Image 1 (cartoon, rainbow over the protein chains, first blue to last red):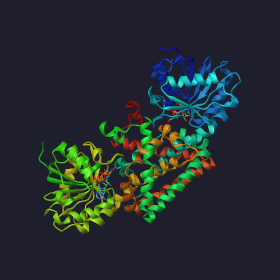
Image 2: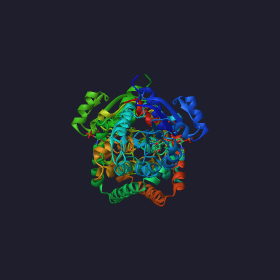
Image 3: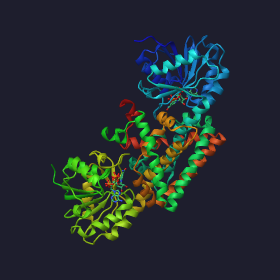
Image 4: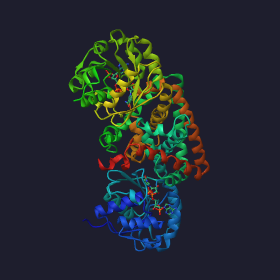
Length: 306
Length: 306
Ligand SMILES: NC(=O)c1ccc[n+]([C@@H]2O[C@H](COP(=O)([O-])OP(=O)(O)OC[C@H]3O[C@@H](n4cnc5c(N)ncnc54)[C@H](OP(=O)(O)O)[C@@H]3O)[C@@H](O)[C@H]2O)c1
Ligand SMILES: NC(=O)c1ccc[n+]([C@@H]2O[C@H](COP(=O)([O-])OP(=O)(O)OC[C@H]3O[C@@H](n4cnc5c(N)ncnc54)[C@H](OP(=O)(O)O)[C@@H]3O)[C@@H](O)[C@H]2O)c1
């Protein structure tokens, strides 16, 4: 077992992300002690049984006492309130980080509450599944995925470096970005795709002439990948869209513009426009496979693992 | 080995679908002999090496001679031309079927060429992957998936029943539908989702302020599922949209309507609207898992199989 990177890590919020972090910390011997807190007694009891925290406290403040790393792992819209609650008990020199999917808004709502003697280093692990809650976590979630570190101006470089090696010890690759660029990149690679998937599934659900049971039976031809994305946690995603409004609306504007061009090509029978567009998009897929960010198994290997 | 359902099956077009059918026929002893033809010499030579056909002929007509089942497995827009070419040599009483993703248009372009002494029974296997060509096929593609049989008015019921048991012997579940309903169901479950995925990948590719290499690196948070869909064969999909125009445009209209409502909710900060919409769409996902049409493994089990 390697030397722990932090002596005591406090996880505030105990869902998919916090649970996966805890399992990965245990796997790698990354933390001396893991302390947890979640809002509901039900979640706290579940985590006591699951055992991914060494100790579960009944208040956020109690969980943070004496921690040298505090991780805010609640929905983006709840980050500010939690920061305010824990601020008085934070240990001198500790690092506070978060895992929120949006960064500008989290920084604006968390930073003002934190005392000057703690280091705030926001971060975002680009890894997730459609499941949520304390039972959903697993140690491998971050392996070979990217975690983006988003240091605030004037951040302490040692604190940033320590959090960076922490994420690497959890299996992730790391990169740094400023909050505005992070929010735009995520609007493209995650937020807008989720909104579109939710919309498509909503349309299918709503259609009188095609029943839900038909949609379900015949989903293998493309639709079911959308349903996985659109099964993600509603609270998390509501908060993402409310807090990354500008970038999401900008990308949505581009999306509808291009969709209308393709729609016109369908209407006018312009096969060349469609063919060229559909050819261009293949290169990105190849890049993703080559970068090791997806499997090339046909249909993700589903056919083999019924 | 069970008794073959057809003595000689001719496959016209030797890509993903025909290849998978051949491997599944061999697995189940479903055909006495499998004869193949593809347009290009390269594909024919590849198939001779792969060995999923017992015989590969250098013309479609030669491949169809004496066959009691002829399968048209070329892009939808090429079906009519192939039907015209093979019509003169079709054996008395043989069945002609196709696997095209659109049915009304294929029926309109194929049926007029066929002589009265053959049975035309259109069908569509709802199974596919992002790969195409003769190397992409595998025996399990249709297992536990649906194949929709779309009999034309006045179809010979024995011919329909025989083709139905053929698809079941390839591993599929079968259903019957009329062509109009088929094309609408597929516009919802497959065609519009594909168009949307292509569009989203196109937008990402086109964005000056986020580079392609950023999109590729950070694709794990939702985007990469779209890229898989948008890596599908451009010729196939061009033909699908050109030939299932009305249903696709109708579903696209509904889609943009709902998307605009969500966009407005984001703009005005209407969290309840977003939350309710995102909650509703989860039920369909559960239905798909329960119906055995997808795996519930987090992230399709990708995390486990790097
Ligand atoms: N899921 C992903 O794909 C993903 C990926 C990267 C980053 N993130 C980010 O990670 C964070 C956590 O996501 P997750 O997927 O782990 O969520 P999750 O599984 O739903 O867990 C959320 C946790 O936050 C708590 N919580 C919810 N609302 C709260 C509130 N208003 N006040 C205080 N605590 C609250 C919940 O407590 P109870 O259990 O007691 O209700 C739960 O412990 C979010 O900021 C999200 O944006 C998610
Ligand atoms: N892929 C799917 O997900 C899926 C699912 C269900 C149904 N389908 C339908 O199945 C059919 C075949 O699809 P696939 O995925 O098997 O395609 P594929 O792997 O691309 O193979 C297509 C085959 O058709 C031949 N072909 C292409 N254009 C032709 C033309 N203009 N004239 C004559 N032959 C031509 C090709 O010949 P060369 O190799 O010589 O070029 C190749 O052998 C399509 O109608 C499609 O709509 C596809």
